[in-house]
Length: 118
Image 1: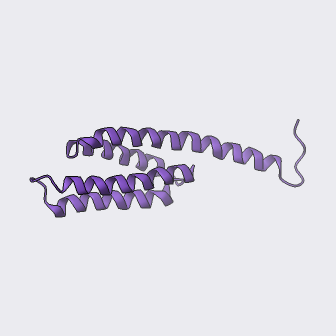
Image 2: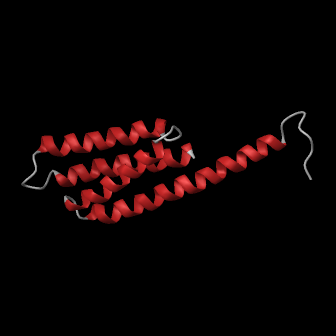
């Protein structure tokens, strides 16, 4: 799960950075505000890469997905990209857990001294 979720989060890191560049063109937003918010979100993406397997890591990832969708109020294209990344996040968590379970079953089956299973 960690690899899939981390890949999604790193993709989001870049998208948030590019969205920050687009948001700088908004006349009513200061550059400091844009980069403070974007920087915090980008930092969370990187920090969550290491926290995704810990308790609450997936929940924080979902909170980031909601914030990414909500950023569409500033940069309208982020509504679409936010939904796309939320779908990718769901797939990363869902299929990542299935892969982890399959790896655990395989490791249990191939441990030395384990009884053969039919």
